[in-house]
Image 1 (cartoon, one colour):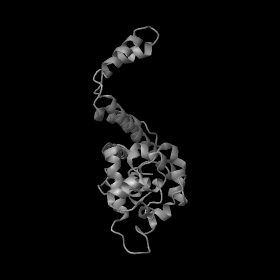
Image 2 (cartoon, one colour; image 1 turned 90 degrees about the vertical axis):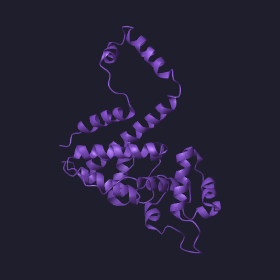
Image 3 (cartoon, helix red, strand yellow; image 1 turned 180 degrees about the horizontal axis):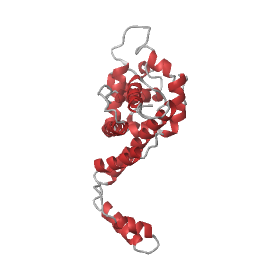
Image 4 (tube, rainbow, N blue to C red; image 1 turned 30 degrees about the vertical axis):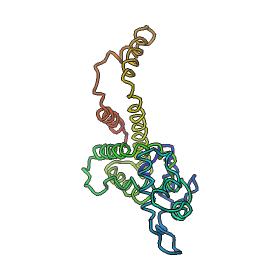
Length: 253
């Protein structure tokens, strides 16, 4: 839930409140997160679930999520492919481990201000920074199904930030899921725009096109919007404006 899409709000709410079993991917969160981190039988291996997960994250950071295969990860930790299946029986499970692993980078112990909007905006900025460090993360969230210990810790912080509101528990979960979905969508757009910016003429070409369309007399609202004073277009400034509008407009009555 600490990193989940809005489409998963109701399902994730049920997992949090009832402790449901395996999700849509077949991953059983109780078995995944509450079982030992290594096989109970046989000799102690020379690697760990943590090492496997870290290797998968490093691969995804360097080459994208498509590069993460059981064979590549096994090669990174110096193990046979079959030996990995005791820790992560499939890529769905490995993805769950990866998402929770990077969720551990989110701070959870700093005191809150008591102003829920300020605290929620700070959480949004933390999520964006995490996703920019791990560009595969926004896409991975759509397949994410469980709540690992790091994700739960950050969720707990978000719920604490929303305590001053009049929202009930279900609404708090929905607000946080909505925030996370917004951040993931925005960062995904940022990443795609940055990749497209490799073409130096792209922005100028788009500006000329929109100016031509706005001047044709058939799009008066667009013409008025384009004639308005511009705002800073840096990624940080744009994200902050969008985030402020989202959170400042929330109705908590």
